[in-house]
Image (cartoon, rainbow, N blue to C red; front, top):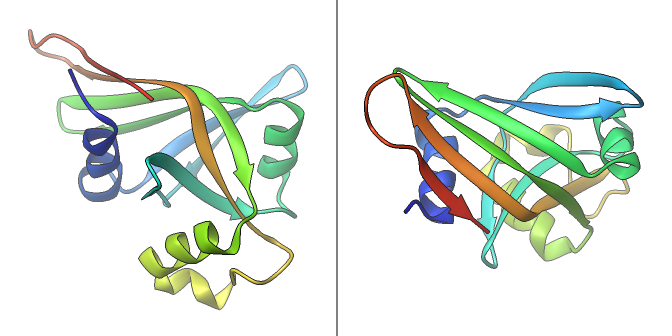
Length: 135
């Protein structure tokens, strides 16, 4: 059985660019993301409140991300919950200091979101069984 730490490690170290899917009304939208954080036992991502992706998440918090490396890929499905606490935003930005050119934990734009009721599935093209983590 996989853990939230396995999911974080894969996204942070194995496949640091992943694709996040949201819904824009009835139209799916997919875009690359590159932030992930493990904070207070939750898996977080980061974006800006002014972006369409954030507006889509507010309208429908159910999302899915997909990451891939070699014969292994990861899908994480769940709901994203905004966390506007300075400590959560600071933790993320400390992990990605290059983002500080665009974001600050004290600005009105920066937002971090954590997965709630998530299911993560590791799969391969080979005979290995799927590994699932729930968090």
